[in-house]
Amino acid sequence: MNTEDFDILKTGIDYLDNAATTMKPKSVIKAVTDYYKEYTSNIHRGDYNNSIRADKEYETTREKIREFINAQSKEEIIYTNGTTNGLNIVVFGFMQHYLKPGDEVIIDQAEHASNSLPWIVLSKKIGFKLVFAPLDKDYKLTVESIKNCITPNTKVISIAHITNTIGDTRDINNIGKLCKENNILFVVDAAQSIAHTKIDVQEDNINFLAFSGHKMYGPTGTGILYGKKFLLEKIQPIEYGGDMNTEFSSTGDYSLKELPTRLEAGTRNIAGVIGLGAAIDYINSIGLEKIHNYEISLHQYLLEQMKQIPNIKIYNPSTQGTIVLFNVDKYFSQDVAIYLNQLNICIRAGNHCAKMLHEVIQDNSTCRISLSFYNTKEDIDKVVEALRNQDKILDTLV
Amino acid sequence: MDANVKRNIILDNYQNPSNKGLPDSNDKSYTKVNSRNESCIDNIDVAAKINNEKLEDIKFDGEACAICTSCTSVMTKQFKGKTLEEAKEIVTNFENMINEQPYNPEILGEFNIYDEIYKQPSRKKCALLPIEAIKKIIQNDNNRS
Image 1 (tube, rainbow over the protein chains, first blue to last red):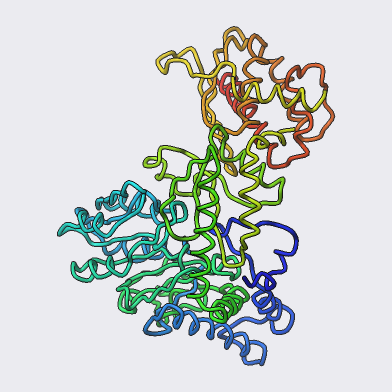
Image 2: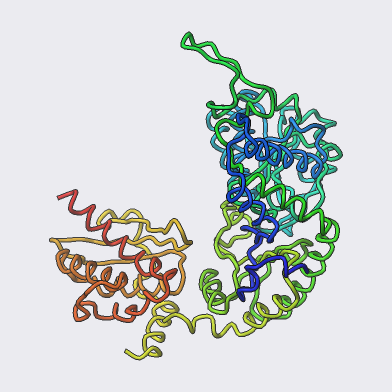
C-alpha cells in the first residue's frame, strides 16, 4: 500500500531489504531539501529568521518523537546518529559508571552487534558477567527464558524488541514488568520494531530505548536515544564540545547544560532531524496499527508461498513479523542474492551483523527477506517465482 | 572462451573443488593465512608450503560463494609447483585482468575463465580474495628470508 509515495519504487526494483534500511517517502525528501534550499542555517544561536525556523523545526521533531513513544518529557529524547550510537552512549556513558564486578547483564545470542559488542567490550573492562538467555527451539526469546536467568546480581536486561534475523517480537511489556519487580534496568534496541509496531516506553517500563531514523522512512545518520530523565542525568557524556556546555575556563572549571542538550555536542544532523520529523508525520498519517496489520498479512502470504518452494530451509517459519530468514539447498547465500539482483530483486545475504546467531542456528550465512508496508503481493510473487527457478541461480556466474 | 565452457569449469571447481581441506594444524611446514572481504561474507583459509622459493603445495578451506570458492580451487592448481617469481607474475596479470588493465592471458591458464568478471562489480572482490591470500603468504615468506 502507499507505493505511490515512494519515487524510488517506480524504478522497477523489488525492494525486500527493509530491515537494512527503508525507502524515503516524497514528504521526507521534501522536508530535507526544503531545509537545504530555503532555510539552511545553524540552530540554537541565530537571531535571524532562517535560524529561528530551523530551530523550531528541529525541536518540533523532538516533540513528535516524544509523543510517538509516549515519553514523559521532551528532555528524555536525545538525538543520536543511529541505534549503535544510542546504545554506545548507554553502555559507555552510563553503564561504565554504574556496573561493578560481580554484576550480571542479560542479553541473548540473536542480538545485533550494536547490542552485544559494546556489552562484551565493557564486560571485559569491568568484569561484570554477561549472561546469554537461551533461545527456544524456534530461536525465539521468551519471557520465561529471561526469568530463569535473573539472579540477585542481575542489574540490566538489554534486548532487541524485534531481532533483525529471526524477527521475533519479544514481549517487552512483560519483560519490562519483570525488570520493575526486580529493580533491573531495561534497555531496548528498537531498531527493527519502531516502524512496525507500537512502543510505549512508560507502559513497557523501558529505561533506555534506542532506534534509527533510516529504518523508519527517515534520513540516514539520525537516531534517538530515549532514557528516563533521572537516568539520562547520570550519563557522563562521551562527547564534549560546542552547544552542550554553559561555561568553561583555562582553570579547568566547566559546567554543562541541562538535558537534552548536554548529550548533543556539536552541530547535529539538522536536515536529518527535520526529515525524521516528516517521517513521523508520514507514519502517523497512515497509522502504525494499519501498517502493522498489513505487514503481518503480507508476511503470512510470503511465508505460505515460500514454504511451498522445494529445497528451501526457512529458519523462522513460526515467526510473525516482517522477516523470512532462509537458505536455498546447495547454494551459498550470496550467490542467491546476486542471482536475485539480476532480476532487480533486493535481498540481503550474510550474517546480518548478528554474529553469535550461527552458534545457535548452525549456519554462518543466510538470505533474508524483510518487508515493509509499501511491498505488494506482486513483489512477493516475483521473488517466489525467482526462487522456484533455483536451477538458474548459477547461470549468471559469467 | 565460450560462456558455457567457462560456467561449467567454474561450477566444477565450485562443486568439486581441488585441494580443499587444510593440512594438520601441527604441520609447521605450511604457512596459513585467512582472507575475508570486509564488504562480503566470503571467508577462506589458504595454507601453502614453500620450499626453495617454490610453492610446493597449496590447500584451502572456508565458506564462500561460487566465484570465490572456484577461483581458490583454480588458484591451488595454477600455483602448485610455481616459483615465487612466477607466482608473483601470475598474481599481477590476474589482478590486471580483473581490474580491466592490460594483461597477458597466456600465463593465466585456467584463470582465464574469470576474464569477464569485471562486468559484475560485486563479484570482483570474490575473485580477488584467494589472490589476496597468496600475496600475504608470499609476503610472509619474503619477510622471513
